[in-house]
Length: 96
Image (cartoon, rainbow, N blue to C red; front, side):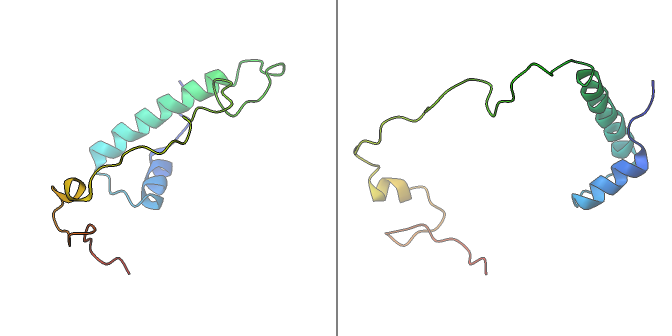
């Protein structure tokens, strides 16, 4: 069984993703990613030359319901379980 990914490559990808992996996690992740890449390699063996490319698994033209005016949730009910609110809206920490 040829390894398609090395621990160093997994370390590099983990670093890019800002993940800190211990040695056990690194070993486990290397095996798991290698298994995934093996499946992908197996799929590459299929002849897809006559398969038309698609963007979705099913040919659905519009899966959305009609846009109809319906009663909405009352403001007080929507705010009832909020950790913090001002009677009109949720209060959230400033991001900027």
